[in-house]
Image (cartoon, rainbow, N blue to C red; front, top):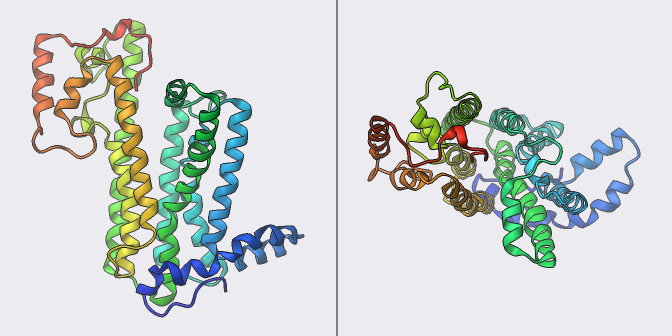
Length: 358
């Protein structure tokens, strides 16, 4: 079997024991792939390669395809289109690889089931916002490209970061599942962590679902108001003319969906830590890099939003970016009520807006 021999839970989180010995398999992959001549030989090759190695190799393949397609189409959202699919695919890959090799695990079943639900939610939300429309591209790439203003530098940035680093990152966030695959061989009994973390992940998924729908409902109401000047049920003119969603979960966090999304992958990492009775392990790199992506992209998103909606600075001063701020808790609600009583907003009247909101 293409898995390390581990005797303790702690050894399951040891990079030198569980990953390093299998790195040579990465360089053997091209030859193995050329030897595939049937479905049976494909399965043999698949199960004989360490799953974290095959996942890493696939992420490089995806990065190469994304780079080539983006350069041909001049559309840099190729990784964006598979962002909601790849992490789930990698998690299911570890589960399926284990199944084929006779490893039955309730914790892997839970990870796979959650991953499918997570992917379905995010893929659906991306689709309904037009992410899969022909020519659709994240508006931030055009802004960054304009700021770079150098074809060679942009091409290098596209190759290194947009295509490859992001693709590798999506494989890295799923590596805790590889550790859980190993722990399932050492100790099949479910621990307290195996009960708590699936429930926590489910709760975070529910938060994302409600945050997405609150934003979607608001944006559709705003569009209707722009077209007809009629105020949809559940909203006021002041709210709609503000230009951005501030009700529900958005009353406590400027990005509740982003907060839950980051927490999901940190929770998966922590799950692997608890299962291996370790404070930290090498899969930390994936979760930490995922956090860095959001820490880097969210300020850009907010600068763009603040440029479109003057009142956003008031919202930003009173509501925490990801985690609700105890120091300002309730201040936005008081501000919004005061603005409602005045019957005005510092934003552009929604009926006159033509630009899309964030």
